[in-house]
Structures are given as structure tokens and as C-alpha cells.
Amino acid sequence: AVAVGVATGGHEAETLREAGADVVFEDLSDTAGFIEVLGRVRAGNREAS
Image (cartoon, rainbow, N blue to C red; front, side, top):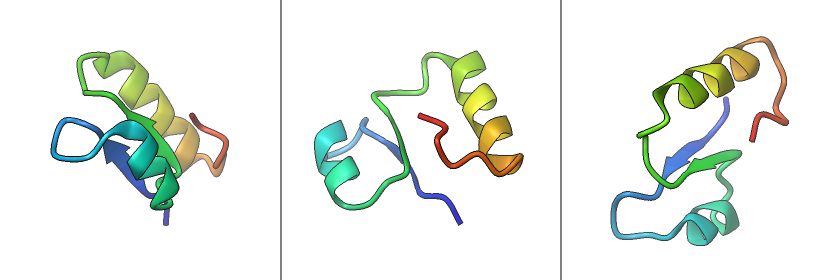
């Protein structure tokens, strides 16, 4: 499993990283980038960020 964090709620991106998120987005405005990262994760590349 890969934890994906999106910092649009009550926590900042750094807090999500410190909590163990493998990939963190500030928001989902870059839809193409988000989908690209999901594709890499699905292919087994955990260095997706």
C-alpha cells in the first residue's frame, strides 16, 4: 500500500510527510500530475513524489 496525502484539510504537507505519507500533494489542481504519480505507484515505483 502507498499512502497519498493531500494538504487541503487541517494539516500541512510537511505534517503529512512526517506522518508517513509516501506522496504528498498541496492540492489536486494538477490532475495530470496526480494521475502520473498514481500510474508510477501502480507500476511499483514508490519513489513517485
